Length: 246
Image (tube, rainbow, N blue to C red):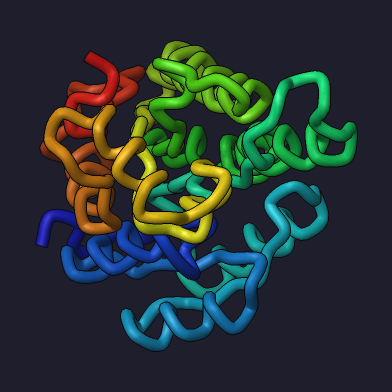
């Protein structure tokens, strides 16, 4: 029960890595606000873990503020925030990606972190404690061709994590990131271009351990970084990638 009596918000928690993180946090004693743009998915996971469902568009300031208001109403305060929600564009040469697709990637993957900081930083500063975890990607550490703008958004996430860590440390707030390799999530087919046995084999050949990241892998790593056991760790961008980035 490493997160006993803690409160947490996990965005993109209706499926994939976010659901794995939400489940692990709840199993370790946290009260979790399950935030997702898919209302039904948020409700399903929240019911499973006795959490608080929240429908949110993390790229919209008013929607994020409504999420903050709900968190305060239902939980009283927020100890942990996991910025997990993310999208990608389909693999293609960088100059062929449409402007709307580019804008969507940076709105969901980057602007959301700004909006959530805007909504919660003062609260955490006042309490002089908090843990923020940003879910980036190995794409931001060791980029693949034809995912240029997604790669760039996740590189932004890693840099933002370190900047946030330095600025917020004096207020007792820790900020870290996870860099997973692709996993069995709704984004997998988008990363690969198509989900075929041949494409999976090609992708897995780049991972020394020989398998994808799982929601459980992410939940375990997130739990550690957001727990008091990691009280001296901030500004770390941890690779949960089976050796992909070596």
